[in-house]
Length: 460
Image (cartoon, rainbow, N blue to C red; front, side, top):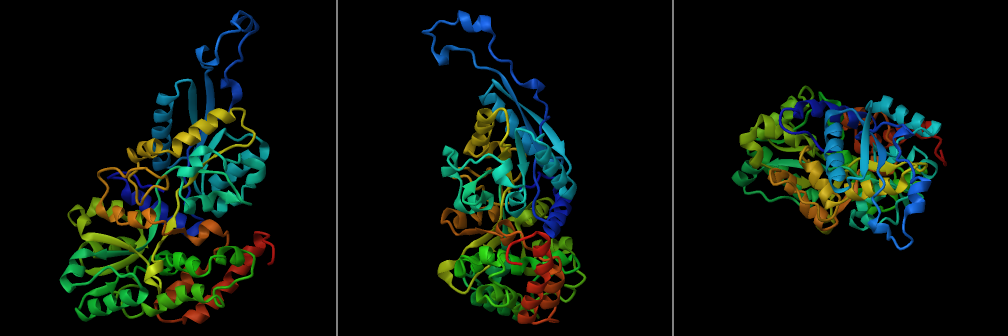
């Protein structure tokens, strides 16, 4: 999900924070859902007067109206308008009418109701990942697996819009990375290098602490921020246990008994003693300020905070860097990614070909360029060849090498519907040194059971 430009960042910090707490990243925009705008067919008299030798290309193109549904957040509406305007300029025979819906759980219910009543828009923007899977895609969403543009979408995104081996969505925006922000001035002052392994990161933390500087910024007043070290480690979990997401969802794998997954809690436990003294009272905003002002060297966080740094501390934005949360093997260093929302085609749309053209445009470098004019990216695009806007800070570009080398994995919430409601309370306890990693992992395994049962997942 991209962030809006200067002046709107604080608003979206709140929006995005709340989204992370509850289900993931909602984005979307909309179109009116009436079929009255469909173009009339060619009349009998027109048909009879056409010459048999007349080629298809010589006929005037039929004008068609399709509808688009998106959520009503300012960023989502701006993105939709930019895409629609650019698409219509290239396709004057296709008009895209945009309708908005609420965001959050109310918006989820709106989308599900439209699908269940057969009243869905031709195209709709919605979450990628596990929330998409809950829409019964085989029944409700058009399969786009074989569309030519799919070849230009990176595999880690495809994973989040795949159900039973078929792909259903096109990316509508940039990504967010989960990892570690660092203050380059502190690194230069102490002669430190960007770590490629967890051991190297902890050695850096030790040197920073010995220099009298806060090594890791903790902002546990906003309890959701305590989850980042554990959640951003999923690339490393998948690298060591490729089937973990599927096995975890089927109740065949646990955090407590899967060494690579348990390691995520162990890493959090190892950070005890390295945070600012007021970490239990510090907020997200104060953590961002500490990082920008050089009062803390590292901040485990999502890259959606970049526009806030650029707005509130523009003089410091070039002093901030980003690296992926390291694993234990430098050769497997990669980043966990919170993926873009997606555009989907309603399976029973009366204008499938026009809708396909719209998705092909969205999932193109040109489409992403249109998005970039209104939504400052907080990470790379997932469309090959899509260029970052010239004005993005270097800290966003720090993520590009991971994407260019294919070293990305979607966050677990995009590939499994299971996320226990008590995770942030558990990670606060681990980060505060009040609970050991093994106990925390076992507690979290118990925490997810009720949710898995409510979802009706097999094996639970």
